[in-house]
Image (cartoon, rainbow, N blue to C red; front, side):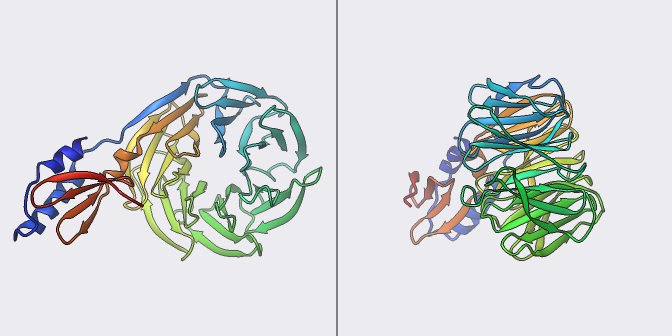
Length: 381
């Protein structure tokens, strides 16, 4: 391990008058090292569909992955082997959005044919078709409160989000959250704790709703007027990440209703963002075909971890947070595996103890530098 070897070269006494000087420069040197993020392409399917893929979701309960394409089909894949279980037929035009419920048992899909369909994950059985007015359903997501609250949400061209109850057949709209503006809604997302619902629009706005009351509690307004095509909450429900056609990514604190940072340096419209399970990182996909891994705290790109020959349409992490899938207009599906330890080693905490200095490498290991030697030991929770 390069960092451990580097630390081991420092031998000095904490009683030395130069102790803090050495520690300071040790940390500066470590953070300035060009340490690359380690990643591998776990699976690559170059022709996963016969047309561009616009949507994808990794099951929250298993290695099942689903993809929706302009070829009118949904495919169910094994993310471990790259093989697909089955193809779901029924839509008459391309699939633009889909999701898997929190139990990993049901799929909801939205198509350009103006229908919403529900399917069984395990056997692919078609459960229901819902006819909607053209443009009345675009993005969809199940409520994280399932199975207690059997709802899913769809965004609309009329500036609202509809909440569908699936506890009865046929499913019906039980509530609509209105933004007060008749602007096309590109994306809608529940916060993982189920308390908030975010809705992004064509006019550079994100509306934040309180799920229990249905009230529009805040509106985040961008600076360029460009469409916001993608949004995602961090797993702890405290931050909201958005990607825009102005080639930037904004990060918002939804507890205090303020923007805490902007990520720049992209070379295309941002089509998808997906927050990692550690609440510290996220990935983005753009029209330039690049998938980038970002650090939330310093708003910096750590690495380009994947490329497609056309725009990246959707991204989704696995339940363990060490792999994610990316799909593209180029018809390909990729599964990327990230080594989280190499990421954590870029950001270390300095803790002064009475007789030594400890630098935490990650959640499991700590380096202890004292007056005679350097040692590594496990952290005890």
